[in-house]
Each structure stands twice: as C-alpha cells, then as structure tokens.
Image 1 (tube, helix red, strand yellow):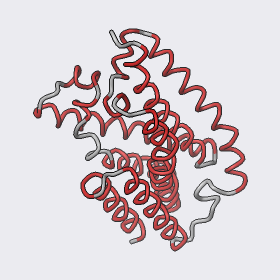
Image 2 (tube, one colour; image 1 turned 180 degrees about the vertical axis):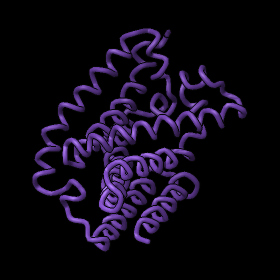
Image 3 (spheres, helix red, strand yellow; image 1 turned 180 degrees about the horizontal axis):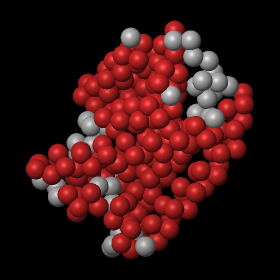
Image 4 (cartoon, one colour; image 1 turned 45 degrees about the horizontal axis):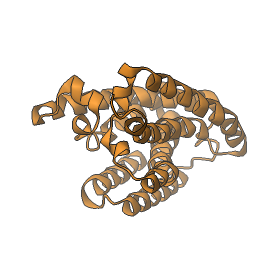
Length: 233
C-alpha cells in the first residue's frame, strides 16, 4: 500500500511537470512538494535516515564520493566535446537556446533542487529502501530502475527534435518519436541501475545525487557552450 502511494505521488508529479505546469518555478515547487510527501511516506513506513542513505555516516561518505564523481563526469564530457564527431551529442536546443542567466538557473536551481532532489529521493532513496527491506537489494534495484525508466516516458517525447545526435540516429519525424522514447526508457533503466549500485556501494544518497547532477548540469553547460565555441561544426 505504501509503495503504491509512492508511485501515485510520482505519477502525479510527472503529469504536473510535463502537462500542466511546465514553467521553471512551478517545476521546482512541484518537485520539492513531491519530495516532502515522499519523505512523509518513508516515515510512515518506518524508514530511518540510514535506510535512505541520509544519516551522518552516509552524508560523510557521500561528500567523499561527490567531487570524484563530478570530476570524472566533467573529464569524460570534455573529452567527448574535444572530438568533432562527439560534439553532435551536445547540439541540443534544451541547452543551446538558453540565455546565460537561464543556464545558471537550470544548473544551480532546476537540476539540483528540482530534478535531482526528487528523482534521487524517490528512486534511490524511498522506493529503493522500501523494496529492499521487503524483497532484497536485487529486487529494489530492478524495480526502482524500471520505474525510473518509465518516469522518462513523457519527457523523452521531443528528444529526437531537440538533440541533433538523437535526431540523426532516429530521425526527426513523428514516426521516430516511439523508437526514440523506447531507447530513452531503456537507457534510463540502465542509468537507474548504475545509480542504485552507486547508492549501495557508497551507503549514501549523496553519491548518486552528485553523479546525477554532474551529468545533467555539465550536460546543459556544454550544450550551451558547444554552438558558441564551435559554431561552424
């Protein structure tokens, strides 16, 4: 029953963010409110801060992992950006069309306080801990990762039009939307499994949160920079 409540809260937040109130302020407020409700459900379920990877020991471990993970992501993305063929992945209107102020807001507010806060609390925190206590780690990782993939169904609908590399691979027409969304869901299921394993190994929710922020935040920043630094490629 409590796991069902978590899924219903996430479904509501997903619909609000993708269909009803898609402005930046509404997005962050929805994510923060949904996170608060999820933490109340976790408390109702009897989960402790340690179960969620948010106890003092977990926070210390996460702070050790965070800079290493963020630096590793930045190095990989910069190496990809340095290769002409790799720059296609950064031709993304979701970052390129932002002003400098919008970019800072996206990287420092929307991503960490909106996306990362809700998704990590939900999928690597509350859901993972609830399922793990009932069915074990393998089930927790599989179920939360699958739900993480499904969470990206709606946001992935325009991916083939916003990202040049995806458009090249799948096409930009309406017939390409379904395979693009399917590929995005599979990719995010795999990403969810990696983040769950990082949560398990680190003992902290901060570690997957740091990796998640680095991928999204640096991704936006480099998508903004790529057409400005290499406008002819």
